[in-house]
Structures are given as structure tokens and as C-alpha cells.
Amino acid sequence: MDMQAIKKAIQENRTALGIEFGSTRIKGVLVENETYTPIASGAHDWENRLENGVWTYSLEDIWTGIQDCYQDLVKDVKEKYDIELDSFGALGISGMMHGYIALDKDENLLVPFRTWRNNITGKASDELTKLFQYNIPQRWSIAHLYQAILNKEEHVKDISSVFTLATYVHWKFTGCKVVGVGEGSGMFPIDAVTRDYNQKMVEQFDELVAPCGFPWKLREIFPKNLKAGEAAGTLTEEGAKLLDVTGRLKAGIPLCPPEGDAGTGMVATNSVAQRTGNVSAGTSAFAMVVLEDNLKKLHREIDMVTTPAGDPVAMAHENNCTTDLNSWVNLFKEFTDAMGIKADMGTLYGMLYNKAMEGDKDCGGVLSYCFHSGEHVAGFSEGRPMVVRGPESNFTLANLMRSHLYTCLGAMRIGLEILFNEENVKIDRLLGHGGLFKTKGVGQQILADAANVPVSVMETAGEGGAWGIALLAAYLIDKKDDETLAQFLDERVFAGNAGSTLDPDPEGVKGFDVFMERYKKGLPIEGAAIGSGIW
Image (tube, rainbow, N blue to C red):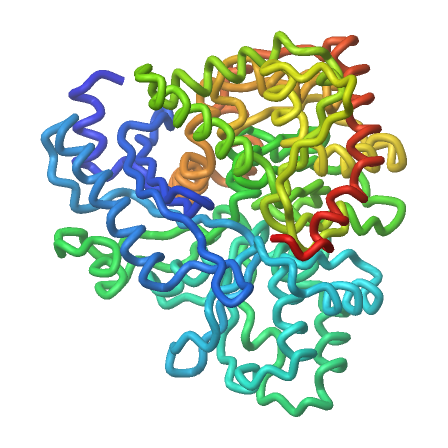
């Protein structure tokens, strides 16, 4: 679209805004509802904190962050189109899945926000998995709630609402206590038929905690599930003032159901149909595969979630991906600064990623673990980033960086092995998005070798989940009668855009396999570091 057409679309509210709370950045993307391409964006950097053993963000972090992100987007619209943004066609809120925000009846926060990153619910996770015969990961909201009950935490009796980050913000904007089913599937198991919380398991949980005498039942404190395309409320006057501190933003804007970053990643990569999959790789990483049939057995390494439309998805998740890798790049930045060499971070990332591709296919015996925090797949509630090598290892810059890129996918690869080898899951296409894929061809090739399937990356991959939730907002107001989300994406958003595809390199596949053998054999080293009490 040309400049005048975009300006007209903004003025006529033929637009949709998506805002996503990522682990390190809050990002907003405005799209016009004809080609569904981004026309403006805004961002705010933030970081979680470890306080009293809990990874958290404060409520102040949440509100100052989204307000700054929105003002950055407003500024971008003004600079590009000379328009004072005061409305748009639809709005969507997304965030990191899972976690635990518990409020009382007066909307007071009962305990600090417990994010997905915490591995402090092991007993609850085990007991609920046994009760439901359904994998309940430690990150899930129900695990956090039940662990608080097991801990006999005083606040539990006062709970009026339990939210994830996205559902909390959505509720403050609209007054509606609802959740997109994809996000809801990371709070509590979903029934594939009803596309709502599994009623049998709801009753099992209520019966389990009944002796505690709490004045609530599960459905009363958890948000109601909605599918993509269903109305989820409108922006209230109070909500508009919360988002836009200048008071210019108008109320009445419709919102789509709030979703998690897994669901928006599926949308942003057109991976909501059966036999499609995507890998999101940033602070954490997860592979999402839309299933044709349910898995044959329970696997503690595999999460069962859904698409934003409610279709079953197998998720191979790892808590740790690029955090340690970023620390190493920052170290090299310190080195170049000390040498008086001017190198921006983008240049450094590109150079180091490409250097990695010159390394030995098995990293020359160099082994690294990127466990900045606990890693459930590996069985660790804490993390210790480390690099290990033998006396005969080929310790070069290329092999060091290659090992850092390989280990970013290590824990996730364990889950993929279960899906492909034990469950015989088939996929037609795998798409990558997130920070690991920003350097052209590098992360993409490593993922292709790790999964041994062709991997595509679209030009829009860098837009990520904020674009994905903007598309869900656009779907809310633009969908035709009986048009499914998959049809909307295939025929209107991604028509003719297949992206660039890289096939697995046979030698790279062998090399990654050798690295994974070392990776799994070396896990006791990580355990010894955690148990040593040094850090």
C-alpha cells in the first residue's frame, strides 16, 4: 500500500494493534487490514528479577512498560504518517504463557507475580500429573496454585482471581475475565471436544482441595475460555487511560481473546493447521506441532496445549535458550571496546553467528549448557551456565559459538526425539521465528539439522508474537462467515508467501547427533555444579 492508502486506513480505523509482553521486550505492532502488514511499531525493554527465589516483574513494571511501548508506537505513527493516533479497529494483548497472578476481591495483588521461569512447583506438578494422568508442567498456573496450597500459603483463601500476564492486562482494559483457549491451555488442561477446561479434571481438582475449605471453586477464579474470533470485550474508559496516559485514546475498541506467546507464534508463522509446526527461539524456546491424533501415552517432557482455535498441539519446551548466548556476545563487545574497535551489537551477532558455521559439525568436542535458570526437561530446578571441554577438544572461536547455538536447542531436541521417534508424529513444514533466526541462514540451518526436517523462515519472522496477536485482533473484526483461522491466515495473510527454506545438511545432522550424545552424558556435570554450593 502507498502512503496515502495507509494514512486513510489509520484514519478510518481499518487497523489492528497487537501488544505482546515478551521476556525482555514489550512490543506493539499496528497492521492495516488489507494486506495485514505492519505499518508502525513501538517497544519497551524490560527484564525480570529474581526476588526471594522467585522470578518476577512488578505491577509497576507491567504498566509503565506497556504505556511506554504504546507511546513509542504513537510516536512512530506521527513520524511516518503525521497522524495523532487516537483509535484503531481492534486490539489484542499477548504475553508469556503460564505463571501466576493472584488477586483478592479488592483487586490487590496477594503475592508477587510468579512467572513461567520459576521451577518451584515440582511436588504440585507431580501430584497433579498423577491425578489427571495428564502432564502438568511446573510453569502452568494450576501447578502454581496447587503448590501454594501444599505450602499452606495464607493468601490462597483470599483468592478471587487467578490470571496470567496477558489475561490480567486484558481484564484491566475490558473488565472481562476471559482467556484465549491457547493461553488457557497453559493454565489448565483443555478438552479437545469442548475446547474448554477439562470438566472431569476440574471436578477432580475441586474434590482434591475441598478439605481445605476455600470459599471458591476453580472455575470461579480462573478466566473463561474463548476461541479465536470470539468477542472478548471492549476497551473501557478506564482501560483507555491505562494504556494511553495522554488521554487521547478513545474507548470502545473491540478486543480479541488474550493469547500466550505460543499461540501468537503459531499465528505469526501460519502454523495452526494439522501437520504444521513452528519453533520460537528467544529467551526460552519451544517447538509446537499441531497434531492429527492425540499422543499414545503421557510424556513428562511434552506439554499438551492448543492453537488459538482450540486444536491440540504438542509442545517441546525449554526454559533456557539465548540468555547465556547473549552474555557471551556482550563479553565479546567488552573485548572490542577494550581494543578500541567500534562494533555495534548487530554486527557482532552477525559475525559470531556466521563464524559458528565454520566450526566442526560436532563442535569439536566443545560442550556448553545454557541453563541460566532451571530446566525441567533436564531435571534441574536451578541453572548454572557452563562451558566444558576435554584436553583434546578443538577449542576455537567457531566451535565455541557453534556449541552455544547448538545448546540453545538442546533441551528442546530431547522433546522432539520423543515426538518423532516414539510417537511417530509427522509434520509437513516447520517454521522458525524469534531472535535466534535474525542472522540469515544460521539459526535456520542449525534447527533444520537438529530436527532433521526442512525449516522455513518468513520475511515477517522478525515481527514475532506482537504481529501474531495483531492478526488475531484483525481476524476478530475481518473474518467472514464460517471462515476458520487457518483459512484466514492461508488465504488472506500468507497467500503466496512460503518464505525461504533450508533442508537438513546430512553432515550437520550427524554432527548435532554427536553433540546431543555428549550433551546428555554430560548432564551430571551440571548437577554437580548446582549441588556444589559455589554459586
